Image (cartoon, rainbow, N blue to C red; front, side, top):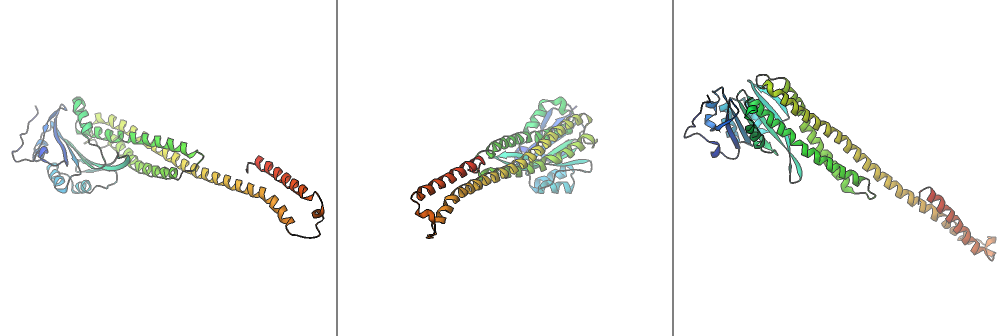
Length: 341
């Protein structure tokens, strides 16, 4: 039988808190939602083996984290990391409480921004702390509540739902990268050079590298969760975690492939610019060579020597013009065939 805890009249309820506290909900052994829990009553609910608590925070201040540390008995180092953020992705264990740090991504105003999620997993509680760009975990929580038979597996299943939600949010971002890369590939092979193409390629490359730094560590974290930490992770949840690992591995492979394609695209773009410049230089050299013949002939007869017998020839002027035109015409076709004109 589920024990109902009546909150103290002076307890701090979630509704009375700032938006830093998103939810604080107790669930029964059957996986069904029991009630919202006041912060002061968390330690009381944790005494019942047939209940667990799911708490969600968004950029909490030091006072709120201190209160939850007191209620859940969390380690000082983990609380310090959760408050400061800007941590690398990792998985730690403090006194049988699993501490996981993950990077998240979200499209904000057409740009990709990155955030962090810090997760505390205990025997009968799950605490998530979001920082920066990250979607609310209300959607996975609602999905869990709609499947109480799975939620009955405990807080480790709620952890799986959060991890699956984080990984799935990378998929539309990767798809947008693919579409933009496809558009840039078309522009690379256009006849006119566009400086903004190489700039967009560089920005896309930079964002992709940041995305890879967020996704790649998740593979190691998910691999550890699906194989170890038997006290915190239910054995029936491990297949679900392996499924999330497969999704993360596929995203990582896709980002690696796209990174190579972007590098190749940048090299091709620079090569196309070099080819275009070479064509311009060849055409200039071709026209310079074509104009050099009449220039040479004109300068030859412009020296005003008196002992040039052809100057006294009656038809010499017309012959010189014909010879000049003939030489120019011959050079034109030779250079045209060589694609220098």
